[in-house]
Length: 290
Image (cartoon, rainbow, N blue to C red; front, top):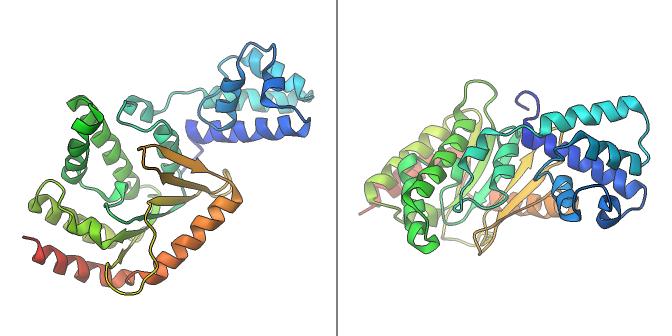
């Protein structure tokens, strides 16, 4: 893992611990929040890592309700709360074009030890060039009825995610499977697509990036949705992320969910071309573009 957990990671750690303490004393969210100055909905957001309790007295009251009296334990959680309450760089990209959970996802993606990702119809986000990303978001602009500023923010966030792969210190390890249609569907122009193809080949040469292509032909395992599995090392449990038809993003750290998507990824990987076949396959496809 790259460095210490950033605010998103600390919020998740805090939420996980508070959820464990609450369940340990058999309280519901409503019972835990009753009369403490914050709502049940807010506590739920805290437990899922979406926000943090801003006031130390709220956390102290909650810990008292959970029977936590050891001062060292209380002080440790208070320090974690202070760190978790910090604003993250990703907050500057919050916008109506960005799914609600995207800041949380990007926050933990930044510090992931390894990401396994699959997309059947688009180039995976962190592999995208700026021109390709802009073409995709521009196509969505009239559908979502958002401004050009929103498009700029979305592109900026995507480029920051791209930076996780190419940073000098401890770049994120990515194992990506891309469906062949992702490279055949023209986004913006043929020139943009050829540039994107060149970028994928370039990234595939990095030690921390492995890319496979799932051809459209042949009797191969298929899956219609995109998803990623994030290995967070020892600090956080593995997380699985998936998009839905409403343009929202869902995340789960439940072992069963992570297990299902891990097996799904293994099947897709076995059905895809070997990583060493990726460059030539993409070069051939780029030459065929008209």
